[in-house]
Image 1 (cartoon, one colour):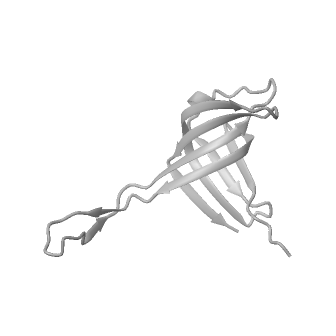
Image 2 (cartoon, helix red, strand yellow):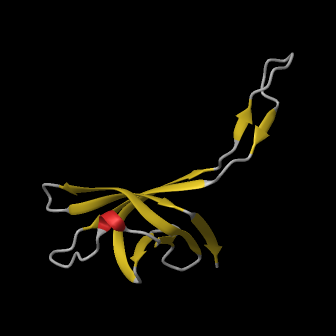
Image 3 (tube, one colour):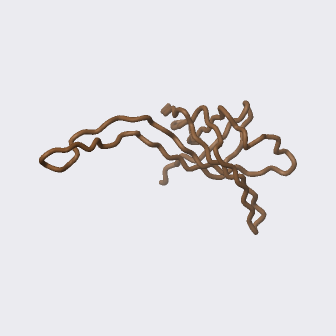
Length: 125
């Protein structure tokens, strides 16, 4: 019997939910090596830097109901969750850095959002 996978993505802007067609997330840990001069000619130390989160989300453009100023989104929230509610990742304080539109022959119109988030919450229930 197949197991159910995480499958729901919701973008919340000003308290209103918008369905996402896709969402890609990237987490930067901020860790990097510290080069030093030594006899072994290798890195011996590492440093912890600043964590950062970038997201690329595609939202469906509704027919005549698109009232959001997508270029100026600040403090949005994106949640990726399972239908059963057992898993949820929420990216908070998201802001757009790039916005583009795409149109296809099948009639699907999408707005592609490049965003950064200030924090991420992992919730397991």
